[in-house]
Image (tube, rainbow, N blue to C red):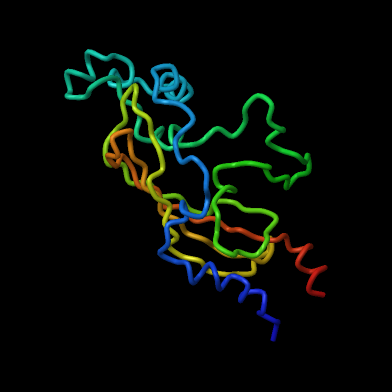
Length: 197
């Protein structure tokens, strides 16, 4: 039977299920920019998504909104912190096929006492939209609760499927969306083979 001791390295994360990970991160959970008309237009353009609620303030006000609304699916983009800025190093430090970003909102998630991993990818994303955001709103992440941690060995490597639920709020602390995402944090198969052989 294969040695499963590496799975126990994930025990501290499993024991933290239910905790709010924002308390471990020490990062600003506020989105990079307020909701603005230009960003809404740029979101709608490639989709050819024509709706006057996303274009015309008078129409939006006529339907009871304070201003032009962003599409529900755009809310998460307004909650993301900046990935790059002047004077910062490039986002990708490597050029290989499996190069990982040096910085990303997902990589910034602080998993308490998790083992070191070399990569991650999302495996599932579910959003519950509570209300639209309008021009001028500022979206931030109010909580990031650890829901599950399941260690597993896959073809890509050893790691754990980690599920996190986040609540997004506006500048008045009114909830606008709930995001539930599962990521696989792993060390590549060739790395684990050389370490454990």
